Image 1 (cartoon, helix red, strand yellow):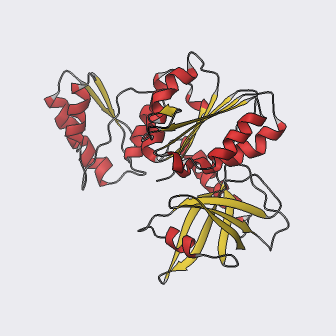
Image 2 (tube, helix red, strand yellow):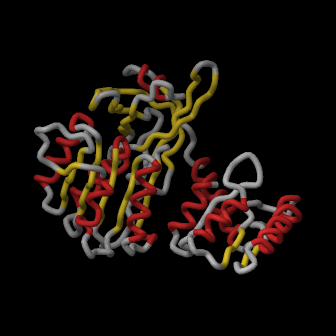
Image 3 (cartoon, helix red, strand yellow):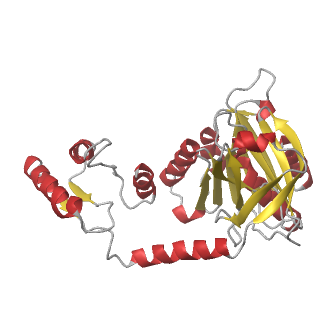
Length: 337
């Protein structure tokens, strides 16, 4: 619900957006309306986040809106219809159906772990093979889902592919979450072990067209971006590609030496690592990735921006880009939590 409100604000249609709740969470509608008025709103639209006309939409919300209209008589407060009946809902349903068909058209396969290597503290690189397939077809940026029995329960988790298409092999990188539901199981796997895979799936992909690209990543959010760069750079020197990659420490710059080699080999690629907790010897960029966006982009608004990492970073960068005047259609993102 809060993510939906945040995405609506980032879409550019309305500058003031609040999530409000009728039960079990805060703020309630009265507190949200008060906040909007304090922030300067003179007209408020209440959108029921419900599918159909039930008790909340038919009785509770009209009663609350009528009461608030009496309290704030100088402010227009309007209540919209529920989501059901809007023509756009049909397209949403079709999208869900298409996603399901795409997933079903790629039946699950048992994949074999071929190789592991630690690439940073608590971060591991995995090489898998799908022996049942002649070729694993995917678009760089997509992910696969693994399912296995963990503690007597079937657990499924998604991991972005970090390699370019290469026959029936693919690579992943994952951060060990000690209390996680699946990564401890993944880290216990050894070459020769198998796991059930579904996919590849996902829409985090390079856009067609002539625009330059800026990639903004933190932590293991580098995985799909590495896949994109390794697939695209060898065959495209007509556009520029810039990678702004943020971590805390230099030891956590995943694939850093590889990106340095790519930058030396391809004149249209820049690698800009930035550390939030650098050592005294570090001579590169410092601070979070957000800090460097204004200087890096300057007056440019014609580049495509790809963002991947934890939700807080992704939301901050999207908000900054919107404030800088970027068309939201140029901003593609993937959140990892």
